[in-house]
Amino acid sequence: MPAARTLGTRLPDGEDNGGMHVPHDQTPEALESAEDPATSETPQPTVEPRPQPKSAYELPSKKNTVLRNMVWALALTMAVVVVVGIAFFGVGSDAGREPLANSELDVAASAERAQDVADFPVAAPEPGEGWTERSARFTTGESAQWTVEYTSPSEHLVTLTEESEVSAPLLSSVLPGATLEEELSIDGADCQVLSGGESGATKRGISCQGEEFGLLVHGATDREELQALMERALAGVRE
Image 1 (tube, helix red, strand yellow):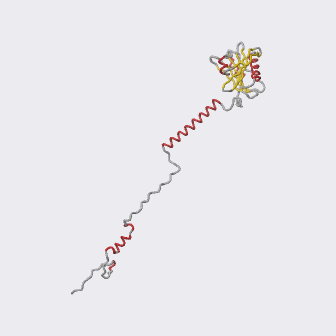
Image 2 (cartoon, helix red, strand yellow):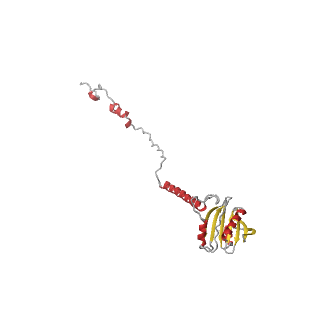
Image 3 (cartoon, one colour):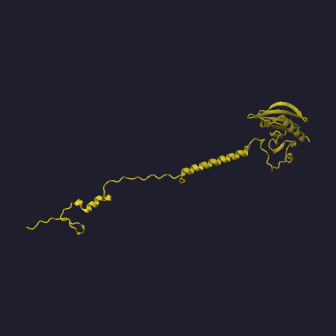
C-alpha cells in the first residue's frame, strides 16, 4: 500500500512546517490582524474640544455700540448744561467776580448815550474811593430803566437803578417784600430806607423820588454805603 500523506501548510518564503497543521487563527496574517489596534473593535473614548477662553477685546456689536453712544450723548449733554449754567449764573458770588482787566467800561459815556433817549436825567455818579464800577446798561420799553452796578468798599454788590419814578413794580422786582424802616430827606429829596429780599438773603435799599426821576440804591451791605452812593447820585442828576 502506498504510504499515507499528511497535508501541511506551507510557510511563507517556501518553508515547510514539517507537515504540522497550523490553525487558521494562528497564521501570521491572523496574528498581525489581532495585534493591530487600528482594527480592534474596542471603542475609543470621545474627547470633547476644550472651550477657548474669551478674548478681553470684543468685536463691536449692536448692543455695545448703542450703549457707547448713549454714554457719549449723556456726557455731551452734561457738558452743555454745565457751560450754559456757568454762562447764565456765573461762578461764585456777584461781589467776588471782578471785571475783566481789559474791559473798557465808561459809565459816563454810557450815560450820555442813554440821555439821548431817556425821559429823566440819567445819574452817573463818581463812586468815590474804594468803589469799583462793574457794569452800566440802559433798557427801553414800557418803563425805561438805567442801571449801574458797583463793588462797594466792603466788597458787596451795590446796584443803582433809575426810572422816572420809584414804582411798586420796581420795588417788588428789586426788593421783594420790602418794608419801610425810616423816612428821611437827602439833598432836598424825599427818601425812604427799605429792607427786604427773598430766600433768606436780606437786602437794604434807599429810594429817593424827585420831580423828574426816581432813584433806588440797593444791596446786601450796610446803610452807610448805600447812603453815600445815593448822595453822589442825587448830586449828579441835579447838576
